[in-house]
Image (cartoon, rainbow, N blue to C red):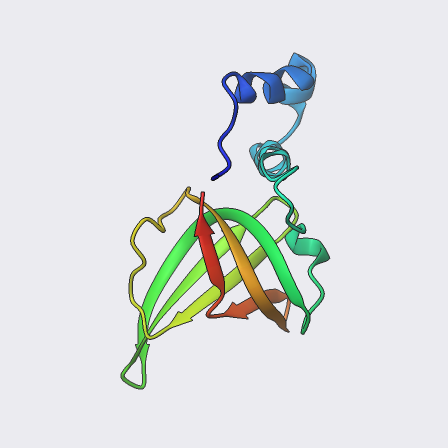
Length: 129
């Protein structure tokens, strides 16, 4: 069954921070906390804890997509963030995946590698939430 927040979930997260804390933190910090809490209990690893060259299951929110045709081969690159880090999912042979759009939660499974500071996973299995 896909994960869905319970009624009042956002209100509970917001209530955990005092009014002063919400005002003193940046939007980026608040967003990172929201994302980290969104994937608690789903059975996934935080992106920051994924070990390169080992099978991993992690989730996050789609931040952006980039379509390209390198050398005539279609490719879709999807940036996913969970508040602890960002990963790039690369789908070769595709320029679009129905339902996969900015702001959508997704679980990814595959073997990741590091390219500089970025975690990259090629053709991962995915589950839209």
